[in-house]
Image (cartoon, rainbow, N blue to C red; front, side):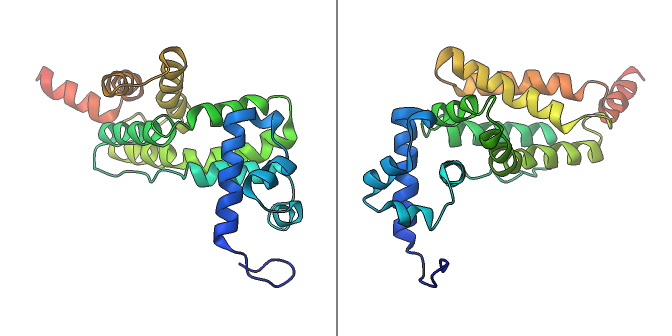
Length: 204
Protein backbone atom coordinates (compact mmCIF):
# COMPACT_ATOMS: atom_id res chain seq x y z
CA UNK A 1 0.00 0.00 0.00
CA UNK A 2 1.55 3.34 -0.98
CA UNK A 3 1.98 6.01 1.65
CA UNK A 4 1.12 9.68 1.19
CA UNK A 5 4.45 10.30 -0.58
CA UNK A 6 3.74 7.62 -3.14
CA UNK A 7 6.33 5.13 -1.94
CA UNK A 8 5.16 1.57 -1.32
CA UNK A 9 5.07 0.45 2.29
CA UNK A 10 7.40 -2.37 3.22
CA UNK A 11 5.46 -5.19 4.90
CA UNK A 12 8.51 -6.16 6.96
CA UNK A 13 8.69 -2.65 8.41
CA UNK A 14 5.01 -2.74 9.33
CA UNK A 15 5.49 -6.15 10.95
CA UNK A 16 8.51 -4.96 12.96
CA UNK A 17 6.60 -1.94 14.26
CA UNK A 18 3.55 -3.97 15.24
CA UNK A 19 5.70 -6.63 16.89
CA UNK A 20 7.57 -3.97 18.84
CA UNK A 21 4.25 -2.47 19.94
CA UNK A 22 3.01 -5.79 21.34
CA UNK A 23 6.35 -6.41 23.07
CA UNK A 24 6.26 -3.01 24.75
CA UNK A 25 2.62 -3.43 25.76
CA UNK A 26 3.69 -6.61 27.56
CA UNK A 27 6.55 -4.81 29.28
CA UNK A 28 5.21 -1.36 30.06
CA UNK A 29 1.46 -1.41 29.46
CA UNK A 30 -0.42 1.14 27.41
CA UNK A 31 0.45 4.02 29.69
CA UNK A 32 4.18 3.39 29.42
CA UNK A 33 4.21 2.90 25.65
CA UNK A 34 5.40 5.74 23.45
CA UNK A 35 5.97 6.21 19.74
CA UNK A 36 9.61 6.95 20.53
CA UNK A 37 9.93 3.65 22.39
CA UNK A 38 8.31 1.68 19.58
CA UNK A 39 10.56 3.35 17.02
CA UNK A 40 13.65 2.46 19.02
CA UNK A 41 12.56 -1.15 19.53
CA UNK A 42 11.63 -1.60 15.85
CA UNK A 43 14.74 0.27 14.70
CA UNK A 44 12.81 2.77 12.62
CA UNK A 45 12.30 6.51 12.84
CA UNK A 46 9.32 8.25 14.42
CA UNK A 47 8.24 9.66 11.01
CA UNK A 48 8.20 6.09 9.66
CA UNK A 49 5.57 5.22 12.26
CA UNK A 50 3.57 8.41 11.82
CA UNK A 51 3.39 7.84 8.06
CA UNK A 52 1.51 4.63 8.83
CA UNK A 53 -0.49 5.46 11.97
CA UNK A 54 -1.64 8.93 13.02
CA UNK A 55 -1.23 8.34 16.74
CA UNK A 56 -0.52 5.87 19.52
CA UNK A 57 -4.15 4.78 19.79
CA UNK A 58 -4.41 3.64 16.17
CA UNK A 59 -1.04 1.93 16.35
CA UNK A 60 -1.98 -0.05 19.45
CA UNK A 61 -5.37 -1.06 18.09
CA UNK A 62 -3.90 -2.32 14.81
CA UNK A 63 -1.20 -4.20 16.70
CA UNK A 64 -3.86 -5.94 18.81
CA UNK A 65 -6.05 -6.59 15.76
CA UNK A 66 -3.20 -8.23 13.85
CA UNK A 67 -2.04 -10.25 16.87
CA UNK A 68 -5.57 -11.47 17.68
CA UNK A 69 -7.53 -11.77 14.42
CA UNK A 70 -11.30 -12.31 14.57
CA UNK A 71 -12.43 -15.91 14.79
CA UNK A 72 -14.67 -17.14 11.97
CA UNK A 73 -18.20 -18.06 12.99
CA UNK A 74 -18.42 -21.88 13.01
CA UNK A 75 -21.48 -23.50 11.47
CA UNK A 76 -21.62 -27.16 12.40
CA UNK A 77 -25.41 -27.29 12.28
CA UNK A 78 -25.52 -27.40 16.08
CA UNK A 79 -25.49 -24.17 18.07
CA UNK A 80 -24.09 -25.75 21.20
CA UNK A 81 -21.18 -27.22 19.25
CA UNK A 82 -20.61 -23.87 17.54
CA UNK A 83 -20.32 -22.13 20.91
CA UNK A 84 -17.83 -24.75 22.09
CA UNK A 85 -15.72 -24.07 19.00
CA UNK A 86 -15.93 -20.32 19.54
CA UNK A 87 -14.85 -20.65 23.16
CA UNK A 88 -11.88 -22.80 22.23
CA UNK A 89 -10.92 -20.33 19.51
CA UNK A 90 -11.08 -17.47 22.02
CA UNK A 91 -8.84 -19.35 24.44
CA UNK A 92 -6.42 -20.35 21.67
CA UNK A 93 -6.09 -16.78 20.40
CA UNK A 94 -5.78 -15.08 23.77
CA UNK A 95 -4.69 -17.45 26.53
CA UNK A 96 -2.48 -19.92 24.70
CA UNK A 97 -0.65 -17.11 22.88
CA UNK A 98 -0.06 -15.22 26.10
CA UNK A 99 -1.90 -12.18 24.72
CA UNK A 100 -4.78 -12.19 27.22
CA UNK A 101 -2.94 -9.98 29.77
CA UNK A 102 -2.03 -7.50 27.02
CA UNK A 103 -5.56 -7.22 25.62
CA UNK A 104 -7.24 -7.00 29.02
CA UNK A 105 -4.73 -4.42 30.27
CA UNK A 106 -5.38 -2.16 27.29
CA UNK A 107 -9.12 -2.44 27.86
CA UNK A 108 -8.60 -1.59 31.53
CA UNK A 109 -6.53 1.45 30.55
CA UNK A 110 -9.33 2.62 28.26
CA UNK A 111 -11.75 3.11 31.17
CA UNK A 112 -12.45 6.81 31.48
CA UNK A 113 -10.48 7.58 28.31
CA UNK A 114 -12.93 7.75 25.43
CA UNK A 115 -10.18 8.63 22.95
CA UNK A 116 -8.98 5.05 23.45
CA UNK A 117 -12.21 3.32 24.53
CA UNK A 118 -14.33 4.29 21.51
CA UNK A 119 -11.94 3.17 18.73
CA UNK A 120 -10.92 0.11 20.76
CA UNK A 121 -14.57 -0.89 21.01
CA UNK A 122 -15.40 -0.10 17.37
CA UNK A 123 -12.24 -1.32 15.64
CA UNK A 124 -11.10 -4.18 17.86
CA UNK A 125 -13.87 -5.51 20.06
CA UNK A 126 -17.00 -5.31 17.88
CA UNK A 127 -15.49 -7.17 14.88
CA UNK A 128 -14.57 -10.00 17.26
CA UNK A 129 -18.10 -10.23 18.61
CA UNK A 130 -19.68 -10.68 15.20
CA UNK A 131 -19.03 -14.43 15.30
CA UNK A 132 -21.12 -14.82 18.46
CA UNK A 133 -23.92 -12.76 16.93
CA UNK A 134 -23.89 -14.93 13.81
CA UNK A 135 -23.97 -18.16 15.82
CA UNK A 136 -26.81 -16.97 18.05
CA UNK A 137 -28.87 -15.70 15.12
CA UNK A 138 -28.51 -19.09 13.43
CA UNK A 139 -29.45 -20.76 16.71
CA UNK A 140 -32.62 -18.68 16.86
CA UNK A 141 -33.46 -19.65 13.28
CA UNK A 142 -32.97 -23.34 14.14
CA UNK A 143 -35.03 -23.10 17.31
CA UNK A 144 -32.04 -23.96 19.50
CA UNK A 145 -32.38 -20.77 21.55
CA UNK A 146 -35.42 -18.58 22.33
CA UNK A 147 -36.28 -16.03 19.63
CA UNK A 148 -35.86 -13.09 22.00
CA UNK A 149 -32.29 -14.05 22.94
CA UNK A 150 -29.95 -11.06 22.86
CA UNK A 151 -26.57 -11.69 21.18
CA UNK A 152 -25.10 -9.28 23.75
CA UNK A 153 -26.39 -11.45 26.58
CA UNK A 154 -25.07 -14.56 24.83
CA UNK A 155 -21.69 -12.89 24.48
CA UNK A 156 -21.57 -12.08 28.18
CA UNK A 157 -22.65 -15.59 29.17
CA UNK A 158 -20.03 -17.17 26.91
CA UNK A 159 -16.99 -14.91 27.27
CA UNK A 160 -17.51 -13.51 30.75
CA UNK A 161 -17.03 -16.77 32.70
CA UNK A 162 -14.02 -17.72 30.57
CA UNK A 163 -12.30 -14.41 31.29
CA UNK A 164 -13.15 -14.56 34.99
CA UNK A 165 -11.90 -18.16 35.36
CA UNK A 166 -8.65 -17.19 33.66
CA UNK A 167 -8.23 -14.16 35.95
CA UNK A 168 -8.74 -16.33 39.03
CA UNK A 169 -6.69 -19.37 37.97
CA UNK A 170 -4.29 -17.88 35.38
CA UNK A 171 -5.11 -20.83 33.14
CA UNK A 172 -8.01 -22.52 31.38
CA UNK A 173 -8.14 -26.27 30.89
CA UNK A 174 -10.26 -28.08 28.32
CA UNK A 175 -12.45 -29.25 31.19
CA UNK A 176 -12.90 -25.66 32.35
CA UNK A 177 -13.94 -24.57 28.87
CA UNK A 178 -16.41 -27.43 28.42
CA UNK A 179 -18.02 -26.92 31.83
CA UNK A 180 -18.35 -23.16 31.46
CA UNK A 181 -19.78 -23.35 27.94
CA UNK A 182 -22.23 -26.08 28.95
CA UNK A 183 -23.39 -23.97 31.89
CA UNK A 184 -23.84 -20.97 29.61
CA UNK A 185 -25.70 -23.12 27.11
CA UNK A 186 -28.11 -24.36 29.77
CA UNK A 187 -29.10 -20.74 30.42
CA UNK A 188 -29.23 -19.72 26.76
CA UNK A 189 -31.28 -22.68 25.54
CA UNK A 190 -33.84 -22.65 28.34
CA UNK A 191 -37.31 -22.22 26.84
CA UNK A 192 -36.09 -22.63 23.25
CA UNK A 193 -38.75 -23.89 20.77
CA UNK A 194 -36.74 -27.00 19.96
CA UNK A 195 -36.31 -27.77 23.67
CA UNK A 196 -40.05 -27.26 24.26
CA UNK A 197 -40.94 -29.55 21.34
CA UNK A 198 -38.54 -32.20 22.61
CA UNK A 199 -40.05 -32.01 26.11
CA UNK A 200 -43.59 -32.32 24.73
CA UNK A 201 -42.67 -35.37 22.66
CA UNK A 202 -41.04 -36.99 25.68
CA UNK A 203 -44.20 -36.48 27.76
CA UNK A 204 -46.25 -38.24 25.11
